[in-house]
Length: 402
Image 1 (cartoon, rainbow, N blue to C red):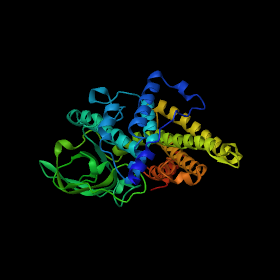
Image 2 (image 1 turned 90 degrees about the vertical axis):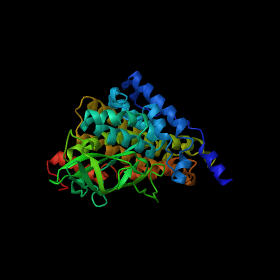
Image 3 (image 1 turned 30 degrees about the vertical axis):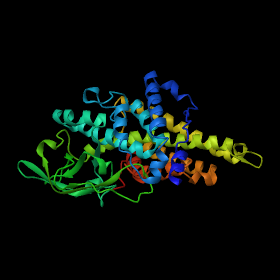
Image 4 (image 1 turned 45 degrees about the vertical axis):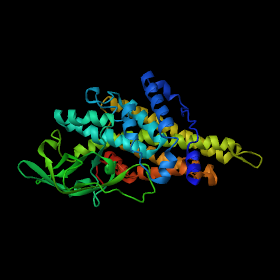
């Protein structure tokens, strides 16, 4: 009975309508609004009714991969000739915002596929690689992952020890990657490794290659509806045609991370909106001392601050999106948005949880799930502090992390 009750409880209707205090919608095209609306409807139908149950059970719903493909959530910024949406970066941001309003783990699945797997193949791959992989990744027929972080090298990826040797007719790959979203279910991995000269290159490693395994990471308190694992390479023979020929060096994976961090800046706003919306509704319904708690000054202060921060982040994202469309956004500008918006969303999740009181820790409301998820988002793809140092380097010209 408990299980049935939990599912029924998680089927609570998603009434979210959006947050737009400054009329940011006026800055969007009709196409932007149509795309956002279609993804919002998708989230309400395919994610919101089930997400609390998935999170409680630490279940990654693999069937969502095909559904993401059908709705155009994979690689929306990739040209249509390769199966992508051919959309601009504002559209991409809005898609990430709506999916993360549903759940950060779901957005991780989508943004890893689009920004960290499809993007490097599109940007650095051969025409053969693009045609072989991109349409299947876009449709959800294939799931991919991105192998950069290692057990001993997170914030300092240049120290990686994963390496490959030229064996004449193939490469021999050895090493391990950790904290890899999608890895347990991935069909391919875009792996960054050093050649014999110590130069970093990208390689496409396919499931089924001998010596390649993807152990799953269990016991997570965060991103519980997302599949996380390792990538282990034990003398894996990688065909030479699987090397990404377009770019080498650490700058290549960093370009991918810029694209993903941009998506996170938008996604975090979605999580913040969901927490704010839940807190506002709850405060108007919850009666204490014979009146709704929304009538108390401290609750109004919390809600006013939430709305202020969300509004600032929306405007930040819109301007950053315009710069991305023009090819003018810098790594430091993307860092500022990722760092600011994730920290903002985490603060709002905590404040919203307090407004809900004891109910806020239950799965009837999304607060604790968003809060736990955002504890990962504030760390991955550049920690909160590393993004501070990226900005510090930009301001002073002095790299503090070297």
